[in-house]
Image (cartoon, one colour):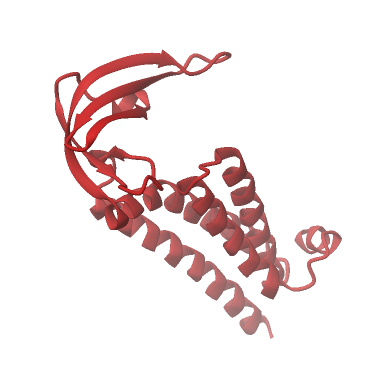
Length: 195
């Protein structure tokens, strides 16, 4: 069944499709983190990359279903790690931390069909006034002092430093890379053991 799907899509071997899928997954994550911050395009590119990696891995393993599942799961976890943790790692690597005071916090309804609330924080920092949008779980009280990760060049959107602990984000990205690598190695070993 997996070979039929791959064959209909024109995938003869997974040697080109699987790396292309990983490249598309990484490009989707970069599009999410870097300007123009296009969430829809990033998710579309990420999903296409996940599907390509999964089909390429399964094709390399001669159509074994576990390779398709392992490829999809490992590429999806890599995409999630790169989009969530990648932003924090980029802010820590290329940005600066500054202490700010929350001067105002307003709650906005962000969903029309399904009720979802977000918060807009107005922060007074050493370099001026900043505005930061967060989800309900990431709100800060008015009058509190917070550490903000900012990029002086304006390439990356600022965020609360408490949301991006490096002790969690670096291992998450490394685990995503290791899991994807392990999937490729297992798919290739299964082919060698079958021959």
